[in-house]
Image (cartoon, rainbow, N blue to C red):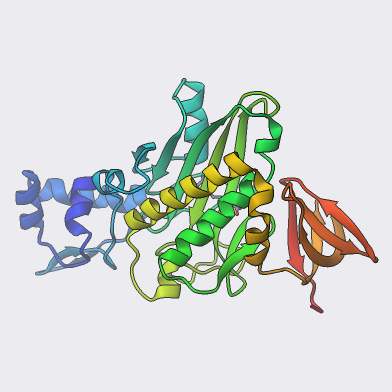
Length: 319
Ligand code: BTN
């Protein structure tokens, strides 16, 4: 099916006859495959008598060879047409003895996972669904601040591709003009105090542009910000490169060395916020973070520190 999709990815019309000839199958076999594409990948295909078939818009598929030729290609990677979740697949691979570091990529996710038990919208061939697995055997302090470091690497990658005004919201949301463009979900396997593996799941809105109702928060994408179709292969190469740089710095010097750079990129420094912790809301002013990546908040005149994967921030209406 992917071969057929590759022939259609330019977004132009192709006749059934030409597609059949290119793949060495009959026109009716092409018709069946197109129906399968529509049904399985939820990808609409326009059919016009006398012209043939075309996709609603051009798309650039992920390409193994191009990704492998990139600067950060030292990591081996697994590329899938469809997965429940790249994080889930990464954990399964670890369970089967796959040796880290490695990356799992997919053209779509049917059960993409977000933070705090939410789902992550993952349509076919539009966005980036990326999970990097690393091994940590230096103790729990190496995990501290790790998700914030990953956020910095994502900000750098998006800026390198030309996106302006991109920054962070503690702990690791990536925003442009208060709209979410990327999210990070870390999942741990093993004992963080001894030897463990961390699955670094990153979702980046790349070419998503339609008015979708399924996302329950303001969002944007690289394509909306830059006004053109994004080649996700280049995005992966840039992301690999930035992750290599920032993770090496974190593991060599510790998170404290990146704290100032993180705060410089924090869009909500000095803002009045509510910290959401389950049903609890704590109001305060953002002072910054500490050397372990915990949030420093001024609450009723006193500084307090907060950390934990289940926490999130909302701007106060009056800030
Ligand atoms: C968030 O809620 O902000 C985190 C979203 C993380 C989504 C990515 S997409 C790749 C990886 N696989 C998943 O199932 N989730 C992460």
